[in-house]
Image 1 (tube, rainbow, N blue to C red):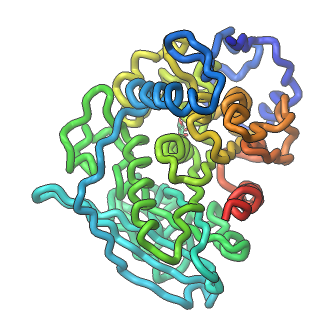
Image 2: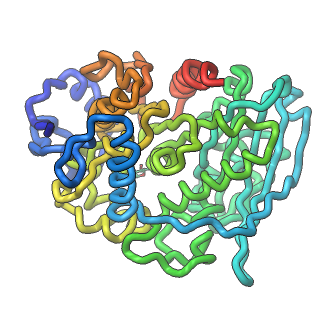
Length: 427
Ligand code: GCU
């Protein structure tokens, strides 16, 4: 089976709404009528042309084949973590956040020879938790201390992007940074609903600039070859390292960890969930190009633009597909398919045309046959993009909400409902 996905899809109302909300770089395509015609590679046809019709064939042959293609052509292969990772609990409190939370700050220390890297995990668990807690694991953009005003959170010392708004001066966080990203984190809601939240500053793992892979954990390894880890793969690798630690922490239910990320970190959560089958759930918030959006649509951000603006995010082989998306043996629906049968949630925002909301919906739609082959309900009977602010939740969940590129309480509410549906039952 091959899919013909073309120009004549009538989403004019949706586009009209979207165009009222947000201006995006003008030289890119935001016109559904100008989306090129393309054929998506079929996740259920192996490279030898044979169709994949059983769960066993998927697991034994096609899944490994697709995973290897994403490793080689898109994100790059990651090495094994060093054998000597040490987890040190730096601080704990059983009465954090006015008695609502248990707080833990754990440092993962990695070393190779003289070189050392420290990755700090901030963990909040509900104070009244009985037994191990299902937990959301996410990376953050400006340091753990930006997630909440809690004065006990250790102020990050790592390099970060300059930002007046976030209180970052000379690429270092200051006290003024505390809680500056709190609107994105819904900590109270997460705790009230009985979940934990664990977060890491992504720059602890790999600083987000084109540094020739000299810093962060790259410093512990030889320079990446063309098919080896770019920054997205490196951040995903760090998430798996956190999961290794959770396996040793009795307060966290490592079998019920949902990996969640926004934007570039949503691309990262998808890649983490695709590679590491220990993640019980995966959530992509507004991840767009190189994340949940189909590359072949070239709607909003394109492969060429992302490789040009962020040359360190993907492996060098991905450059081959600049302006040449059709030549790529995979597209992003196959990334979502790698997560099957585990639940995956894809969220878009109406005003975030840069991330191609419709392309994000379609990845779920075209991944659904794999989910169904593996015995789940895929995307249920959903065939068209749901209306604004009306989440759909099957094995694959999706919503498009009002508003801009961001993480809001509406998003968290949906993720918690989705987690109740899937993680509570699987206990
Ligand atoms: C840029 C980039 C996107 C990315 C976003 C973010 O807009 O083009 O691909 O998702 O930054 O991470 O905030």
